[in-house]
Image (cartoon, rainbow, N blue to C red; front, side, top):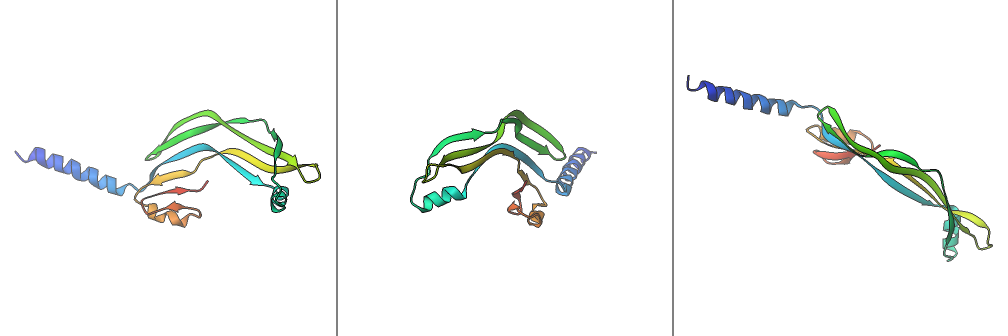
Amino acid sequence: MRFAPRLKMLGTVTLAAAMSFCISGCVGAIVALPEKITLRTDQYKALSARSLTPAVTRTAQSTPAREWCGLTVWALVVPVPLKLPVCRSYYEQSFGSDEFGNEIVLLNSEQKVASPFYACGPFMMLGPIVHGYQGNALCGVFPD
């Protein structure tokens, strides 16, 4: 009779350990933060190639749209969102003058909320199957 509580506790610990090894999912997070991408136009590159410094004279921006950004934590199967609609997405063009004084587009920029999926778990060794996976056998990030 003295061994019953110890045996019960040992059974509980063994069951908890066995269940933790059998979890087939991943625990991770989705991080959604604004990312700004600026691309130089061919006209910009042509001015730079002629040793002329491209100067931005004005910028036109689309109407910004509010987007949800923040963090979503995956606790086994249940997503727990920690997001607010405080980020802005927009598209803009920066204009300047060419060597003749004509207005041209120098830069195209876009700010949007990207949300890669960061994950860790026992089966992350299968992550490289997905194109664009970056990480190792324990943790990594999946593309959008």
